Image (cartoon, rainbow, N blue to C red; front, side):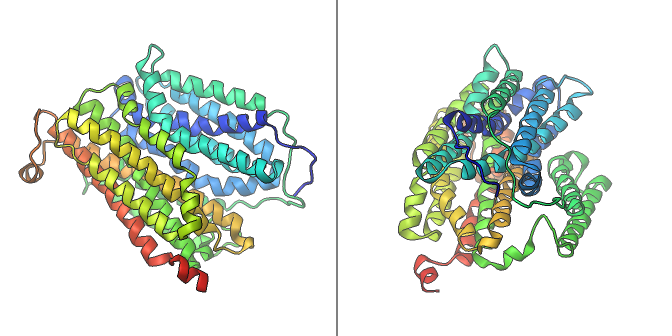
Length: 484
């Protein structure tokens, strides 16, 4: 590491927090305002679902690579490139017109927003670890973490508030540009830093391209399969592309010495369990796109009213984020992770009660979002500790990268699949067998929306259950871990 006398300041720290907010607060707000954008741009819901999930997908694919690249070419340079990408991506999304150019501009913009997160996240956190020390570093990391968790929790409310105001949904992305410019200004004093003796960084382009093609094909299959027809030629081709390029990705990663995903890490049972649990728990973020679509289409809520329902999520996750740390110290990682997943399961079950009248459902939704925030607060620190504390120091960097990658890919696929289920069911007639089992009270003209949401939430519930199963199988109890 290059030696430096520079000490981090609150001004720079605020710039780092603003930089992560460009993604977690502003880019993430599309999950709430996507129904409004779909109507404004004259776009079908399934294409919009691809756009929503694309940012997390590109963040997940590139975050490991960019972290290593930054060590070689310079963290400040990489960080600033990330902010320029955030500006470009937000500009494309915010200026997307109605008509032929809407889809390419929106998709490219979302991909750039995801790339910006891959550039900004590892570099800003890495520089906090370099330029802050002791208690000041702990404080800086806590505030940075609140920027990510708090931004994510507030994204639905802030995005809905802006979209429902005279500014409109485009104002969200104009504000994101302003925030990115302010972040550039606040961090201009940073001295360049990179790893000592860092040679030319080798990028595993073969593995990245294979993985990206497989993941994009999978996303299109999930979101457009119902439109194409599940047995149509194009759908079968998409499945084949996913399988073939997925196999080629694994083949390449096992051959090249500088693979961007080190499969050797998964020989560590605890790391495997914690990373899979992280993937699944982030997949439950699908509720954040299904719930707004339900309330706006079935109950005619505005995006602002929908955002209000999620406020409890933001407040609780910020207030209780350090509770997971205390539980980890007392009980080890396994129990808090399971408790967190159980709490999230209860939250999702409450959201599944879409057969109720709107007034009753709103009460359940408010409680559910508070529980969702509490469950994530229980889960976050123990899962991270379980994944990284069981790796040797030589693998800590690559392990952290894969753990973050699992977060983004889990979010991307969870959002895509739950939204895809919701859209597929909502676009047709009500499902007769489901109506025979469950009586949907009140209005009957919106039953297909309510059934779509119920089944979309059901997928998220399955993911929460898989977290519990994974942890039970892979992560040892505290006493067993201590005796090893």
